[in-house]
Amino acid sequence: MADNILDLNRRAWNSLVENGNRWTVPVSPEEIAAARRGQWQIVLTPFRPVPSNWFPGLDGAKVLCLASGGGQQGPILAAAGAEVVVFDNSPRQLDQDRLVASRDGLTIDTIEGDMADLGAFADQTFDLIVHPISNCFVPDLEPVWSEAYRVLRTGGAMLAGFTNPLRYLFNEDIEYSSDLLYVVNTVPYSDEEQLTNEQKQRYTVDGEPFEFGHTLESQIGGQLKAGFVIAGFYEDLYPPEEDKLSAHIPSFAATRALKL
Image (cartoon, one colour):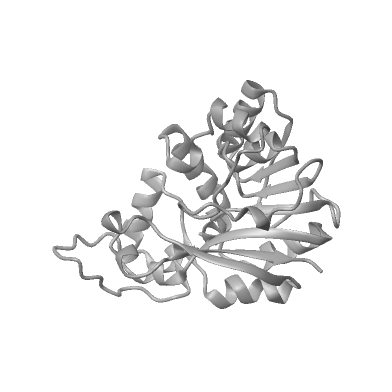
């Protein structure tokens, strides 16, 4: 199964585009026009905007939107003046970026590939890497961080969102009759290893991507091991009335990591 995760998740995200998943809906012409006027923001996590002081000057900056297809972050940054490459495993997600580029007269390069293999790029190519929550769809984070560090220029920054692994402790398939949460899984979590064969088959049929709940040591410690210095951090959550866990604790986070 492990060898097929990349292909399975590519097909799943292609399907999610067709179904109008929130993370596949391109930004509007109005948002692009505002970004051209210098009024813009992006998210790495469900709702909280990235602080403006996390970004370098974008005019002419070379930006890699890593596993960031969907016509959202890349077009906004391109409209704000950056030279943007969007790199994603799903061709249909990349189609969304191409759609906005064509619609609004933007220049965006789109490349299909695995976030853990950035061999398409030379060392020290980018000034900024933007990596919204997406590494939950790969089983191993070490190559993601090491490749990001390699292609980032000295003095550059990587802005990365991720899921707190505690979110994977709870089985979302259970129909709860109260606000109680039941711990049923272990962390690090893997759909590949912890789902039943019946559940795996349902994921495959329904077009749901396989997920992996990586430890905080892999998320934050992995960035440090790759050579980054963490210079910023924040947490985020869903509206508590819509998500049981968010009523108790934020379960998403973002880091600003520097290559010094």
